[in-house]
Image (cartoon, rainbow, N blue to C red; front, side, top):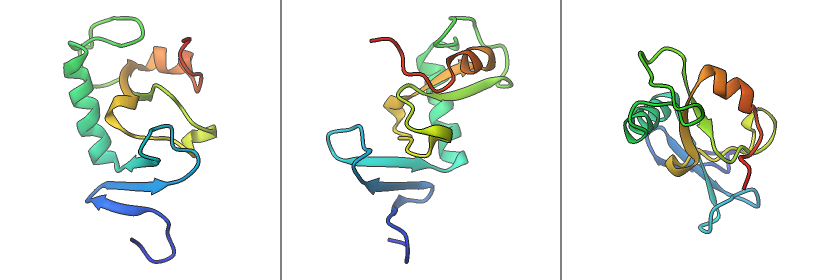
Length: 105
């Protein structure tokens, strides 16, 4: 654990914190570095067959693809959880349209 920080380093590029804002049964929220988030995003693109999770349009290049938190937490993602199951790949237009709203249940 870093001195003066409540964040625990799981491995290089991955930190976690146990708090009341965790939306997972284990009670932790995870925060990924940009490099780790890119790995998750590339895997999500593959899982989604190269298509946007919002509109279904096929991605032609990696430009204009954003990682989206399915269950966003707080303004500017202050309480976000970067677990892979909470991330989806969206085109920039769908990301802009969704904003910080949660999907309809």
